[in-house]
Length: 295
Image (tube, rainbow, N blue to C red; front, top):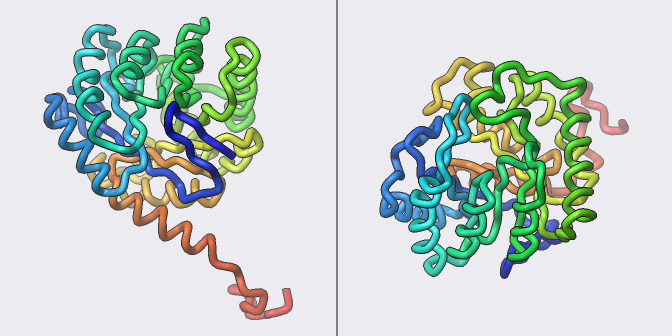
C-alpha cells in the first residue's frame, strides 16, 4: 500500500506515522490561543518535528463541538505565514486542516502537501477534489455528521460502523470516478468525535479493522477528545493516558497514522506497541487462563 502526497511517498507496511497538531486558533478545545502568533506556531511546529512527528497538521479554524465558523480571509491570515515559514525548514509533509477550497489551494501554494478535509461529508461539488488532483496532494477523507456547530446535537446512526463504511465507499467512488484522484493519494479517517456519541466513538474504535478493506491508510485522531471526559470524567489536561490507550488499540486493529497533540508520548507508545506486535508468539506458551500448553 502506497500513500503519495506531492513529493512525499510512504510505503506500507512501515512504522506508523505520528501527525503533530498545530492549532493556530483562539478557541480550539485543548490548546486554543497558545499558538495564535505565527512565531509561536512556527516554534511549536519545529518542536514537534524534533520530538519525532512524521507529519504536521496546521489548522486555522476550530472544529470543536459548537465552534463558530470563521471567514476564508481570517483562516488564510492565520495559517499561510506559518506554512510559508515552515515549508523550507522541514523535511516532512505539512497537512492543512480545512474545509475551504480556497484555503486548501493557498496552503498548497505555500508548501503544504496534504489536505485534511474536515468538510468531506458535506461536500456537494468537486472543487476541493479538483484542487487535490491538480496539485497531486494527499487527501484525508474524514467522516462527520453535521457541522462543528451542530454535530453533537443529536447524532444518530443505524449502525455507526456500517454507516461510516458506506460513506467511505461513496466518497472513494466519487473521487476516482468523477474527478480521477488516484487512490494512492487518499487516507481515511472515521472522524472520532465528529457527530458521534460516546458509544459511537467506542464502536468505531472497536470496529477499526473493518475499515482496512479499502487498503488505504487509516488516520485516527483521539487526542484529548471529549468522549474521554464523558467516560472517565477527566479534564482535557488529564486525558493523555486514555488517549494513548485508544492509540495503541487503534494500531493493533489497523491504523497507520495517529494525529496527536502529545508527540513524544505518542511516539513512545506507538513504537513500543509496534515492537510487541512484531514479536512472534511462542506456540509453547501456557494458556493464561488454565495453564495448558496444547490449546
